[in-house]
Every structure is written in C-alpha cells, then in structure tokens.
Image (cartoon, rainbow, N blue to C red):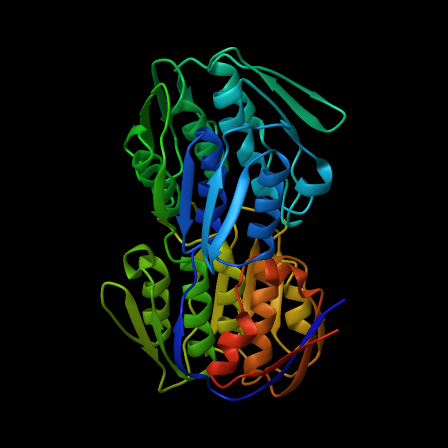
Length: 417
C-alpha cells in the first residue's frame, strides 16, 4: 500500500494549474451513453475515479479512445452489456449515473447499489422515485437496481432533498423522454450546470440549470459533440488553503473565481489577501490568520468538500472556530488524525470546535476518505517535522498529480510503497 511522506514547516510559493473537475467529468462521461454518435470530452482529469468510470463504460460496450492527455472520445453505438457490476461500482458512488442514461437510451439497466467514501448514507431513493415518476419499473434485488421502461415519459418531479447525482441522473434520463420533465428542488451546483451545458451541446433542450427548478423538453435523439470539462473548484480551494495555512503565496491558473465566492469570502475573513481575474486567483498571507466559523450546506453555501481543509486552517489560526457539518453525518473522521498532530478540536454531534494552536507536529496518520486525505496533506505541509500519510488511494480518486503540483510549490513530498 502506498504512503506519502511530507517534510513540513515551509510556506509554499509558486504557480499551479488546476485540472478538470472530477465531479463534473464523471456525469459528463456518462452522457456518452445517450447517443450512438462519437462524443469527445476534453480537460478530463487523470484520476482513479475517471479511470474506473471509463472501465465501467467500456465493459458496457462503449468504444473509448484517449486522443491525448485529458482528451477522450467515446462512442456508444452498440451497448452490449447493460450491467454495472458491484466490483466496479463499490469504490465509486458516481457509477449510479449510468442508470438514467441507459434507461432512457435502451430501456433497461441493472446497476449495483453504489459505494465510495464512508462519509454518510447518501441514499439513492430520489433517483428511483424520479425514474418511477417517468414510467420506469424498478426493483432492488441482491444489491442491484433493476430498471425497465419501454419509453420514459416527462413528469413533474419534486425531490425531497437536494441531491447532486439525483438531479444529474434525472436530467440525463429526461433528455430522451416523451414530453417535458420539471425537476423541483434541484441541485444548483456548478457541476450540474456544466452537465446541462454539455447535454445542450448534444442537442438537449434544458433550461433553468443553476436554479432550483430545471425544465427538460425531451428530444428523439442526441448527437455528437465536443465538450470541455470545467476546472475543479475543490482542487482550487485546497491549494488556496495550502498557501493560506502555510503563510505563503500562490498564483492559480485555469480556475473559476465566480463559483468560489463563499470560499474566497472565508479566506478573506481569515486575513488572506486575494486578487482574481476571469480565470486566475492570487493569494498571499503576511500575518497569522484568524479563525473563521462556517456551516456547510448545498451550493451556493459553503461546500462540504472544503470543510476538512478549512479545519486544518482553523487548527493553526488565532482564536476559536465552530464548524457545523449539515450534509454528511460521518464527515469528521479526520478530526482524530489531526489531533494526533497536535490540533485542539472538540466534536459534539455535527459540530466541531477548533481552538487554534501555534504549530502542528508531524506524525503518522491514516486517510479515511477523499477530502480527509487532502486535509492531512495540508496538515503535513504546515506541521513541524515528518508526516506519513497511509491509505492515500482515497487521495488519488480526486486530485491529479498532487505530489508533482505541491513539489513545484516547494513542498518536500514523496510517495513510497
């Protein structure tokens, strides 16, 4: 099993280019199932999750060619296997996103109930409820979702909770349904907008993406297209916090400040100096940062995927901060590992109280999920001494070439077997 060794204590400095967004790329790759024509996707990040998704699509019969780094062509002219097996789905929850497109295009799908990070239950009942409203017959047997529909029919669907993958699955399914589908209480995340714009480029008729009501008018077929995946806002935020927490300076290229409003606001509140343009952000720190309170909630509020990283910043900031996690019930698993490094954190229910300390100390720690992995890397690069991070396969699911990028910023980091 691979580990990361980090020798911390040095402020990071330099320039970094942000990769394509994992959470946008995965549903966009699944959109290839909606057409028999060739679909090209650019700016695809090279991650374990994208590799798993491509393997899943390939074994379903999608012809895939990697034209060059980050550019992929997919042709789903002949889907030969309508099953997404447990072996391929268990490590990646996003595999549920093949359900809607397969059902819409060929009228049948068998998808294993998903896995992924152990940060909460994240049920798929909203996916099932929505597809049933569109006329699908669905049963769950032996850990698999069996879905059939001669043809999906447009429906008015009000989702009980805000769900990103649920919104994406139903939106893709509705593109080929008869009539109009209205999704109420839809997710507003930028990645949902990116998928909608991708589908529109393929001939779909979608309006309202980015709001809580999305309207999809079904069409008979979608056609070939080339689409560029948006930059990863969570990777951007992670590198911003790396610079802020270490007292350094960073220039970030190929990013989207317009979708990072609340993260930039919190960094400003902590005392970081930030400048930005259309596709770049510059951050520098000249003083010890101040603690900032935050509460996670669906977009445009503070993202749950940035909570663990901000906890590291608060661990070495001046004062006391309160972090409330409202999205996932098990998303404080990084706290015990940070406490091993000298952080002063108390947890009660879904609230963590962080008392800032002067320094963290290097230690052996273990990653428990994707964003917890990132928080431990950040803790390691600001800690005094050596930090060894175990179970880093989580990290490789969501961060492209993270050691290479951090090394270019002056971090002493190595991967070992």
